[in-house]
Length: 468
Figure 1 (cartoon, rainbow, N blue to C red):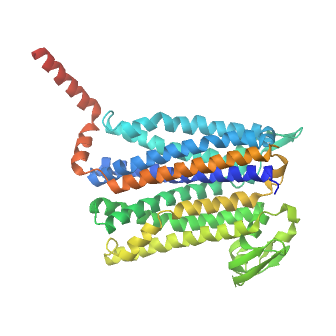
Figure 2: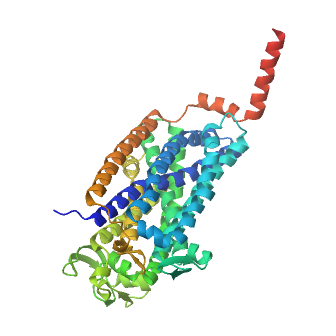
Figure 3: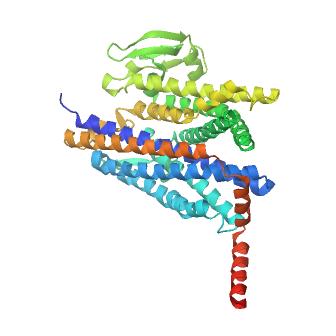
């Protein structure tokens, strides 16, 4: 069987970016949570908040490192596997990615050391400032990455000169039509990802009857966060869908499984098996007119379907169709878990309900799965375009020998799979070890007053030397 170099390059990039996105999705939320806990500790002096911050900072550090390592290769793949794309859009995407490094990565790297190792070396206010800077740095990084990717989805603020893109308005490039929706959607996804990781781990401790005060506080805060974030994500997702309908209607058609060129009163498909060859769906389970109601706010609203464009301009429908339902289904389960947690809280049984705690355990990867599914909807749904409506993917793939691409893809799969196993091993080891005990925390609480603490220690050392 002949190997397709272009398809292998696309699979390689899809695999590496899918692996990479797992870690920023966790670190953005964890950095924010750690900043909140440390701030609450400074305000209330409740040692449980300090215990939460001290425990979760290690998983954050491991996850942050994995994100850096796994993300390095992505910029190289643009040059090796999609070199023509880099030539065409370099003047637009190059500066955006450089801004991410200059304003976010350097900021994170500059203060990360203080955040991780400065507990007993700097004052508590300076340490808290470093923690907040790292958290803000993760948000800024998301801003630039989403701005670049959104421009590929809804390009604006450019002109094409001699076949190359040039910037006419940086404001229009950065704040392109889909960028605000996609940035908000992604940040909320990251917060929810960390929320259910924290809530699930806390529920595991409660099931094991370990570190109960620590686990109760972690689970309680996670449930309050989920109760706000999950419904908010649903509303933002709806607004994002309306924006996508305006600018990428074929993507919406693939998400909803709509085949006719136009369909009035389109049903909401709960389940179906899309058939691209015969341009139809099999085994449909549908709710009449609800898709039109959601997307047009009218039961008889008209939606554009897949047949409105030639077959070569359609994305791969089955992957988009099922990914969208996985994302929405898990999102609804998150809302249900948050509501169930609220109901149990009112009854006074949040921390004792075994079925609920087991559900929270099982939902530890829910945010990651949702993020990946949403990313597939977004990226595969844009195909066959890299820059929507302007640059086709197959036109800019570097004509590499298929055997070389297959070799590098195999190496990536083996290497990244090993890294993932190592990551999961150390994360599980940290969870089994548990949070630091109160005796250790008391030493650290003294140590965070580092300038005066260190100065007194040096003075005492000098006096001892003089006396001797």
